[in-house]
Amino acid sequence: MIADLLTILKKDLTLDLRRAENFIAMLFFSVIILLVFSFSLPPDEEAHQSLAPGVYWVTFLMSGMLGLSKNFQLEKEMGCMEALLIAPISRGAIFMGKMLGTLVFLLLMQMILIPVFSLLFYSPAMGFFFELLGLSAVTALGFASLGTLLSGLTTDVRFKEILLPILLFPLLVPLLLAAVQIMSGIFAGQGFQAELDWLKLLVGFDLIFLIAAYLTFDFVMEL
Amino acid sequence: MNAAPLLQIAQVRKDFGYKRILKDVSFDLNAGDFTLLLGQNGAGKSTLLKILSGLMRPSQGEVFYRGANLKEDPQLLRQDLGVIGHHPQVYGDLSAFENLLFFAKLRHLKDPKALVEDALERVDLARFKNAQVKNFSSGMFKRMGIARLMISRPRLLLLDEPYTGLDYKSVDFFNRFLVDFARSGGAILMVTHQLDVCFEISSRIAILEQGCITEDHPRSSFNYQELIDHYQRATQ
Image (cartoon, rainbow over all chains, first blue to last red; front, side, top):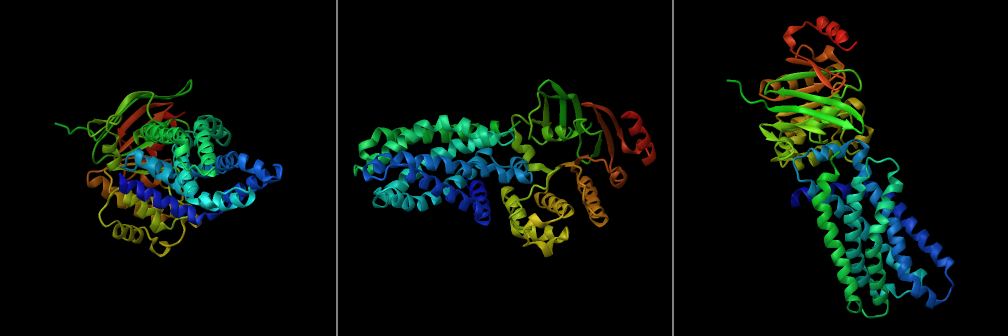
């Protein structure tokens, strides 16, 4: 199974590299959202710092949607999803490969967004770059797990661009609340320790949806 | 005593909402069979192929492959299955070589690179092996599909309009591949409207009409013109 998921992951990353316009569009979109928020908030450091975590994760959520929607689009374009589904591999491997592809895509974006965010919001984000990257990884894992499952579920549905966020956003509320709280703690210089309960919630969310998505992906992909 | 059928379809029914597409279809496919499945547009042929390939669950009924229920053991079928469908099933931004290598790796084949090189040579795509397939013609896509079948070495082929876009040379090559495949004990179920190119090499003709198999005969029961006449009468 590991070999299969790595084969799928490698293929997805190769396609992402060759379609770099997806990544660039997603990055531009994120920077524009950050800019709009930056202009719309009062120009004082205190307001920026208190609102910055919320702004960051809303940006993550919205741009992450672009990453998700391209996930199965590639497979549908020339009927490759069918070829994948009849391959003699576990459907869990297909899910894991695609989920990890999304995760890598999101993390690369976060690595670029953190410095931009730090610049626009008087926030001490660059001082906590690795803590934020760690937090992004844990948050992105939950987002990618649930998002990949729902993206697969809505692939053949009309108005999937609307349906996917309608299904996904409410389910992501605990994840986002936890991420905002932990980020506030990091900015306050308390690291992860001060928000240990939120961190547990985040990890719990990841585990529940990773396992649930892995186990149900087989049923989701059958008509 | 007859050997057990390779593929057995028992009382398969498929509903989409209130619309019944397949009505209690029962059908066996034996090793060495080369069956043409005929029927008008909307008769349910593609839906049946999707159910047989495990892409779609029947609303009722069972599909057995080598005696195992597809619901309980889908991997047994997937290991032996080769499909050519409506879509080219390739990634446009990958080269011909990368596409075939990807699917060969998913089949855990030994020395996949050599197999891919050989298959590309045989379908006359070797000189395009590093070209991104998004610029290929529909005939080249079909040849990619044939190359994928060659690499995966299936025991059962489910083919949906495989001749579309193929030139005469490729049709001839593909037909020789199918004949060898059936002779070596493989089973073929082919949906096609291009009877003229495959009638002679098939062994059995079935007609699906309004969700039911209405006719199932050995190909030797007809000559080509008789089949056309019979088919036209049956589908009127």
